Image (cartoon, rainbow, N blue to C red; front, side, top):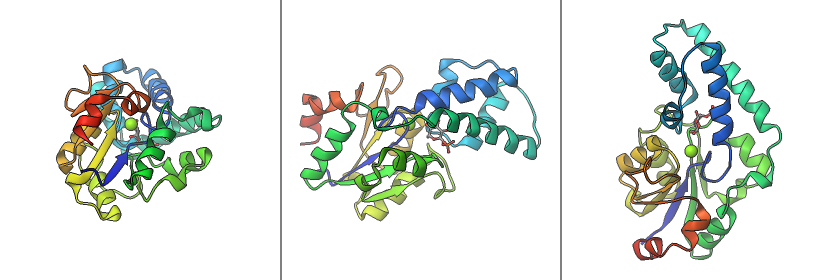
Length: 217
Ligand code: G6P
Ligand code: MG
């Protein structure tokens, strides 16, 4: 039985994954590092600092800590620029309906994101009240695929990990769920998210999925 659902934010509830992509691509261009869609998949779910480290490693570039901080904050400034127009229309298909349907059956709702911008995003969309517990990138020491963010959220929800269902669009996040001992639904491409228990293209599709109803009655 399902007692809680823990949602990733970017790319699961809100259409912000594209903005992270655009901002990282700008960084990569400026640093003259090739940046592919596969690279972008690797960055999803991963903290800002570790994402930059990944890019630098790929470009075979060493950088002192103060420069890294500069580039990370430049990336975030670009990201925040993209976010400036964010509103309810950026909620992803089925998000509100699925959360409502879970709440009706007494399932507790959690947020488990690597983002340090989660507060702003929830506020912009007016969805803070959806969550019984929220854990973001400011509250953890280790980024996904480390299970910390999900375990912390489960702890706050007072639900055992095996009764928490994770909803994730990133490979790092799906691995984090696995590492936390939680079942996991992938949101996105089946080819990319193979390690999830079930993959759907969005939460709208999940609402009508018979495979989902059978696995999580
Ligand atoms: C999410 C996104 C990542 C992003 C990370 C940190 O997990 O999927 O692409 O790097 O959050 O986000 P932040 O908003 O703190 O830069
Ligand atoms: Mg995500």
